[in-house]
Image (cartoon, rainbow, N blue to C red):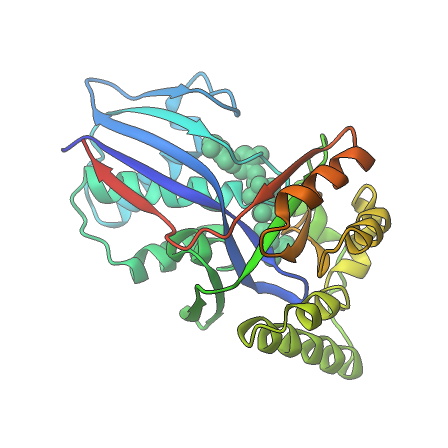
Length: 296
Ligand SMILES: Nc1ncnc2c1ncn2[C@@H]1O[C@H](COP(=O)(O)OP(=O)(O)OP(=O)(O)O)[C@@H](O)[C@H]1O
Ligand SMILES: N[C@@H](CCO)C(=O)O
């Protein structure tokens, strides 16, 4: 096996009303250096701390599952991991880790997986494609899984900067999904998908002011999750005052993501940091490349 480095970007899911179907890759990365070894070893330069038994490592479990699926033996690897993606904050850390695990199996077992297969496997493990697809392909990806078949479309030329306001607390996706209703009335669903259609159309036609306005009108998840998100109303209000197009819950939260005019990210991030002193506020850009592999 050739040693390799895999980097996978963070991603934000939903982008307002694109619940479980729309996601955007951003320039924070999970990076793994992988080399063949006598025994399995995970060297972690960022959280989470590795479990005492490598067999319990989330990334190992994914790699093993994929190797088993192809009836291959997974050779032992030394994996050195560094991540800029905060855990359980709504920035797709689990999707990035899943794709990294798939890529270890792909390289170590010579599976020659296509991107479509990686998307399929990742989606099956994560449960929905909205983080996996942009983390794999980069950019804004809109996708759907129907009877195990995934359809998607990618957009790579959005001209916006991003400001993330990351609180010090975690919110597990599982907990944030529990507060959502089981069903919506016909009237509610029609309005919610109308809002979603407008977000997509305005984003791809470059009407970012309308996109920001409609993102804040989500009816699928934000109204139910708002109570779980610290400073939800304050962040939406103040980001707008500072010049943002709009702010959304990133993925399942608790991070809030503001979309801002191109070139204004750093200025608006500085202003947000002053009103959120306990947060990590960062100006980010859209990643357009997705998962990358380099050989050493
Ligand atoms: N690099 C990693 N190594 C091992 N486990 C990881 C890694 N990244 C994420 N995980 C696992 O995924 C969990 C977080 O997944 P969760 O779906 O709750 O949040 P998220 O993916 O960060 O956010 P969201 O899905 O809302 O974007 C972590 O608590 C950890 O168990
Ligand atoms: N679409 C998912 C993203 C988090 O995995 C949710 O909002 O629950």
